[in-house]
Length: 550
Image 1 (cartoon, rainbow, N blue to C red):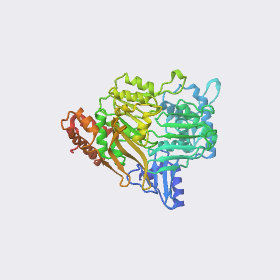
Image 2: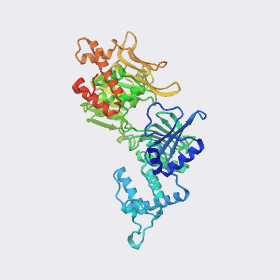
Image 3: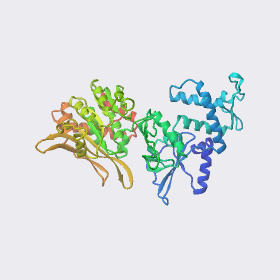
């Protein structure tokens, strides 16, 4: 019996769905546990995301679109009534239970109360001894507790829905489980869209059913991030317990099509630089250049428009910072994931009385007193930008994301309101990486458009001089190294730090690192932790620390 057949055996609702789909289309989906390699533009793929949930990606040339179908158990009307009854019983018992200290404890408590509230009849007993008990337990004052009679199939369905709705993410639980999603966007009751890593924007078959269910869900999510929404406070932004970022607009007064939300999925493990090379975002020489920059304390801004991949690129590059560095990260919403042991994570506090709020500017000043080796600012937008440049001027390298689509626009924003950095200070920033989401031959891709060095302000030319060391050609989708034997940062900064008499020897270091990255790529070493381990060992032991020859 193969994996597909076993999945259908465990999940009757999946078997029923596949049977119906096969009859209607005369096709059967391909069962894939991982979406790898070149996928067809019009797929027919079934992806398991944790029993009892499956995702069906289906498209045809005739429809010219891809459908995103979440498959989960379906409750019949009488089962929904039973579920409501079970929820009422759980609510009655809950006040007598200790307050759970974590999500795990909450999940265990819900499971315990569920088992105490039901009797499994036709369909066989459930596995645990507690579940097998069918004798009504005595309550205080001579009362006998009520229990809901369920079949084994009903028990399994309700166990899923209780966890989904109380501990999980409610109706969007199937897409929360999908590791191939980047964003979730919902407008009103039944318009839930996702941005898929392989297939871009797709509408899902999910919805909230009624406006009341949507409102209840939004209030619940806003409470999880500690920023409750209401008609008087309709907008909330923050991070969910799993790290995903959510923005809620809770009011039909300001969102004509209905309340909406956008959620950026959180990845538990950062995308590695090798994966970004594999995807064509950058090439090995560009990554090697960034490796040398971050290893030697250069300040870098990752700049681009919304959804251009700034934070993803920043996280991937953190593997290049030396292992024993002390790192401080400052963010509104936690997204930065340095792999280093000495990492102080600082988060702004925007709610509460004005005198108790803590913004990026205050956190950045606090970080400077702690003598960090690197400061990471999640996003520079205002007065904290001037403080970041002061930090660079005093020898504290800064990495940050920034909203600007070109170096010229980045400098204009930095020197204008509300940041107001003197133009003569701009050369404290060493490197700007410009990123953009692009369409190439009908495919949605993320590319580094350029890596540019900030040489400095020259009065005779009336502005800041920059050098483009890498450029992307949209026609060929190839990055070219324009900085060979002409890099200000490599020759005038890093080579001198390294003590080279012949500063052009630094290019040998760059190409050696590029070969190491290419060898990792050729050998399929692309998980962040594995890549970081090789980088650490090379830093400590040179080529002798590598697990392969170069």
